[in-house]
Length: 217
View 1 (cartoon, helix red, strand yellow):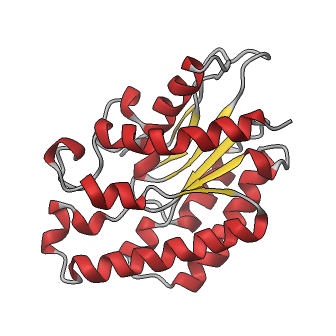
View 2 (cartoon, rainbow, N blue to C red):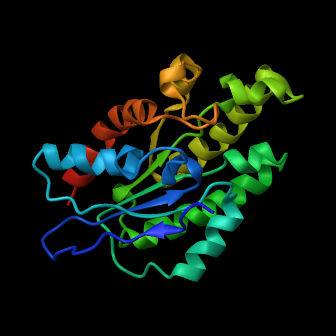
View 3 (cartoon, rainbow, N blue to C red):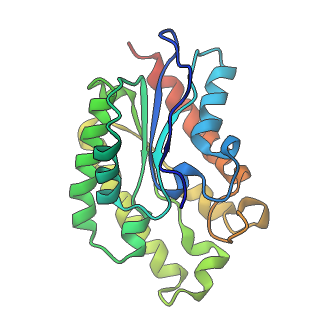
């Protein structure tokens, strides 16, 4: 079983605290810890001169929105954070669950994320769901790449709309996943999950948003 969460050790009062919530894409299934995109993002922000602590990650391969919510209840991440990211929903789509259900549960998770950010919505960032339909793993899926992509677009539209209603930053990494996500170098060994190199692409897209969020008072 992929690890449930990682708590950044030795965080000091002067460091900016970062909480990353999600599923396999956040825990980095199939890549070393240093290759996970939240870890890469924290490293990039430190390179910019920001005193970032290592991220605390609450994520596990296979989680849906309600499973992430239950895990948060079990872990009780009660600390206050300066930056919170959320990337969730691919397993809702994979299991054939309804977009309407996702929208409701995603909205609840976004509210919880805002609470962890000390109710500063300007410190919360959502990443879109990547398109796994273009990967070698998806070749055997009866739905086909086109249908998978259409369904993911619907889930992402719901997430984008909820973020827009709440003034939450939304970072679109789906295009990057479609552009290069089928390349061998951009895939983990399972032919489904991203490699560290693909996560670096996501980090590049998320970094400007994270910089802007952390610049707010």
